[in-house]
Length: 362
Image (tube, rainbow, N blue to C red):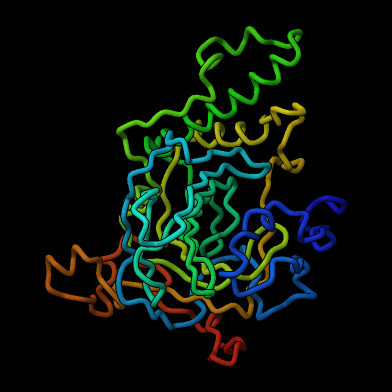
């Protein structure tokens, strides 16, 4: 709404925001100052880099030459140094940070992002956002999963993003939701214990004495399994910003072109975890959802935003290269190689020239 919603974000002190507190320790590696609130898109146009946007190809300039390569790591969701958080507007997995890239521990998931980012950068957090804030070719999605990667050369932060829609039950997602459910139970249990007149008996005894116990397990949950579910190696890319205050412009979005699926029950579980979570200290509800049950920032103007689309014409997957001996696919044969062979070139309506101005239809 006008007092607290996205229209009022520009009035918030940047240093009072959750995102400032999260990223401030990494300020030296970021190309912008986190102390400036840039949520007022009209005032801070900055090359039209505000996020989220409707994703579609606006330039024919994919510079990537290989797939996004990943390593799983060995930490699990139940490792003591992995922090699962129910945020006011999302679910978050926060991974520990290695002080030095050469350190073997903690062995977090890593990724080789193409286009000169450096090999196998550490994942620092995974956010589950419902509903999705980005759209793809005008289509809305139920959730998006964002995998944030830290790069310490001052270039910014790559965010590997997967869109999700209601469909089949997702076993890999449920493993994470089960762990978030434990966090919710722990918070709720703490509030019930602070007031014995509340419905304490409804919680049951499953987590009464062990909700805060985190133990190492052999199963290796990692976010890259979501990418495998898409069966796609291709994506859209653009330079944008945080989707909540202070809306700083240092993110390099890489949005996989094919969505994953989750069940309706899983979607409702995610929303309920966020909307009914309570702070275990003051027992106040933490959610910031609006009257429509949404946390999403509205789509931002992208009329001058350069968004590139990588296809099999730029690269084949590593496995296909090994199998076929080919490095790319021929133009016109994309449907034989790609699960989502749409929007392969920017239309005349969407094409933006190098000057940043939108091309006129011929």
